[in-house]
Amino acid sequence: MAKSGRYPSYTTCVARALSASTEPLSIDALLLTVSRERPLGKGARHEIYRAIRKLYQAVPVAPSQFGWLSHLLQHSTFRHQLSAEEARRGYLLLDELEHAVFFPQFFQDQRADVRRITVELMGGPVLAAELAVERKIWSLRLGVEFAEWIDELGGQSHDDILILVQNAVEGRYMMRLQPRESRDEAAIREQNIRLARAAEELVASSRRTDKVMPVWELAALLIGRNLYRSPIPPDDLHMVLHQYSALRLSEDGSGYVLDSRGATKKKKMVALRNPTSPNRRASDPSGDTLADFDTAFSTSELKDNDPAAWLEDGKRYFDMESEEDTCPDYESYLEAHRMSEGTEEALSHSDYHLLEAELEMLLGLEQEFGYLLPEQSQRVDDLAERLFIDLESFRSEIEDYEDDEDDGLDGSDDGAWFWKN
Image 1: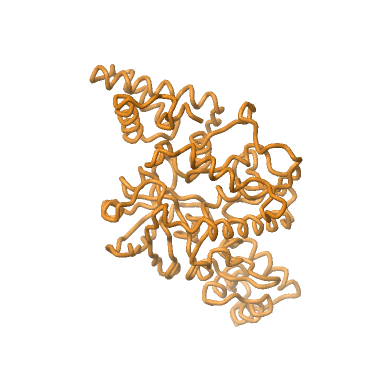
Image 2: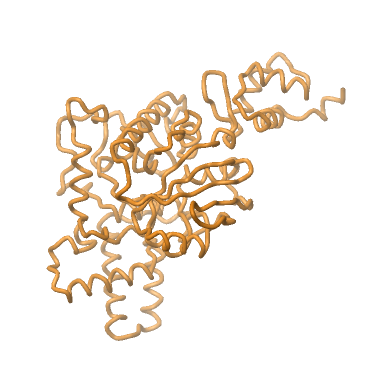
């Protein structure tokens, strides 16, 4: 055997063993495999555990059993709610879970992954996709063909993209468009409850001194528990945890903690749209935004026989006059801010809408006069960047809103936009 200085590290050996096995391995199996590459000392078992903790893709699936994330993703299905901007421009904004799905190795060192993946669009072409950045948020760039595929199928904002992992190691995926009206709400809600309970259990059992579990780590653990093996996957991870669990994001937004007081008012806000998208402003095509809110809210009401009932003090879910009042647009901004790489402090709810109103005013002047002064145009760009708002979409909304007013719609109707929070 070679000298000890040339032996591969325990971390290298464990990574090789797990990545080479399509099935999870026990600690004993890992010890046996590692022993073929290097001598084992008295503390070998401890070193194996230490190595596992250093490897993001080494995921516990059962007591003393670990799998490799890229293999655990096989045949899993995930749900992504489509935004109008994503459909039009041909990309998907990625939250931590989806980032781990498409690029499992990314969170090992959180550096940009240069690998290109293959995405088969059901009933459409096969695309080459890559990691990109849109509005300072990690995204999957799919291109014009993806936008054309969505358009040909009549897809629109709030429809779901179902992501099937064919082979994460080779980077092969399939996507299917599911219209909003085709959702099996009862089955999806059941999956949401199952996911929330598992997440609570995982965070509660964490032995971290600060009790904060990073979102990307929680995502890997949920995959390891087969929470995404059902052909009917749950909704967006962040939305599910906000609506169905007693977890809350840490102050810096990096992870989840168990809220010992039960769900806070802000957490109970029903997330009606994809929280990873910076552009969730457009009303539903049917115009029944408030009705949809009432429907979603009623499904989360406390009932004696509701397994998803909150640990609550008996009060209403939230007070619309509360200082903690929020809205989907602001929640979208907070999520985009959290996922960006900036260090600027997040705006308050009222400050966000104050700047949003300024942006609307400037775009209104541009529409009325046909141009803006250079300093005004620069201010528009600065506001859009700070608020994570896509200008093209925002301009379209203003035009649509004014068209509705011209058609005689009362500003107090459901057609009214961000003032109706």
